[in-house]
Image (cartoon, rainbow, N blue to C red; front, side, top):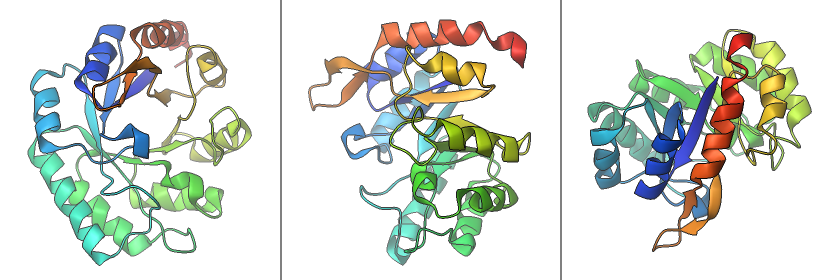
Length: 231
């Protein structure tokens, strides 16, 4: 069972490591639902990270419909991440009608390979999610981070289960959105192999970023360890 912690600060990173996280997703500006981390933050973390680290590639807040200039920025950020030795990137984009821009995604995937590839929560806006899942599999992604097209993974649980059945072993469906130590067992019991959470606590950094709570991470990791035998 993989517990991925979303970290937007050194404090969150430290708590994720101490708490026993399996993998990190690095970003900045969680207040804007996460943006591409700065080179400085990335360098600091990669220098001392002892577990696989994935990088969110998202150049701005707002929707996931990107113009040519923004696609070029994403491409440059993917290349930057590759050059710095990350294990994976978390990417995604949509057309104006919330369908998948296959040509653009193929370009991003080609740039990112052989890194591990996660399609991020742009998926929660995509039309025809089941058909879109099949297209994302064909594109070569390794997983989809999704709340089941609802505000939380709890609310989207039914669709998450349906997506997992379709994906089977071709791609990992990784629930994320509102997952914590109180509800994580729901996803473990349902057979999901990976979960994603930021484990936000009451503490914040000097610039207002929420800090991942160590106790919450430890409880989730402990719960996850009890389900290892299922996989």
